[in-house]
Amino acid sequence: MGGFGTYLIGGSDRRKERRVRSPAFTLVELLVVMGIIAMLVSILLPALAGAQKQAKSVQCKSNLRNLGLILYQYVNENKGWLFPVGPDGPDGRPTTYGTNKPPNERWPMHVSQFKINVPNPMPFNPALYDPSAYDPDHFPVAPFTPPILVCPIDENPWEAHSYVLNQHLADKRIKLGSKNFGGISSSEVVVAGEKRNSQRDYYMERAEFDRIVEKYQHGVKLGSNYLFHDCHVDTVTPNTALTGMDPWDPKLPDVTTTQPGH
Image (cartoon, rainbow, N blue to C red; front, top):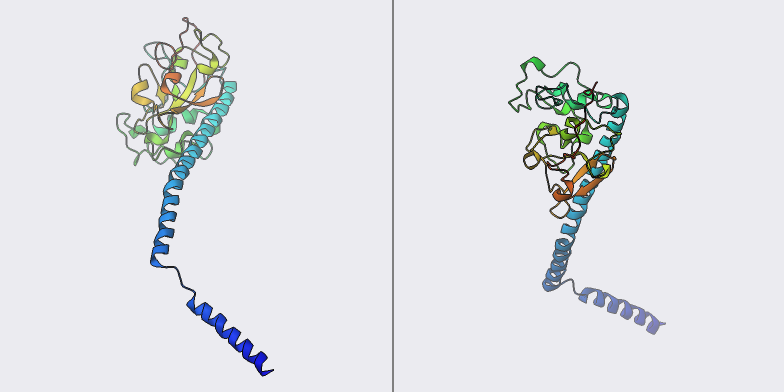
């Protein structure tokens, strides 16, 4: 029995000795592990950043698609006109509801679905508005702008919106049911696109493409997102987004019709 007990004690001592002598990570091993982790992080971060940017692009496309669906409802309420414009100006073309108006009178506020939760009372006196001055502190635009009009990539876009409407369509009196676009299809006719973050405009008018439109919002290879006349949304390069002689201007024969009504 004594020998059996001695064997147990001896075995326990050897196990304790092995535990005591088991070495921890050496400094070299720790440095190797840290180096591997750093390398993995350097590999994964660009992929994660790319995935995040792609997610924002998808959300932007969703915003434009929802805008298209809302404009379809506007069409039904306004005799086929694609978006709000004002009465004809001195040049015989429809005027706009953009920065020439105070925030509460711009085109989103002429769309019934966007008038929900409009501030009451007004946060400013519209009579004091100066169209030539950008003054977001005294004339905030966000309370009169639905969130779907902001691309998630944009940080604090001027006038609280990211998308511009194609004023050429109003100039040409194009409605939803229009068919003749001078040899191009409705899937090539731009209704709305992305503006530069530092531009105030709500409409892309004649010869303004280079100044207003953000050509590479979602990358040099991809371009920007656009809403087209057939209500599909796509990410295309600037060359694909150019239509007609003037960007976004389909070549059409002269059409005489009544001005848009609201």
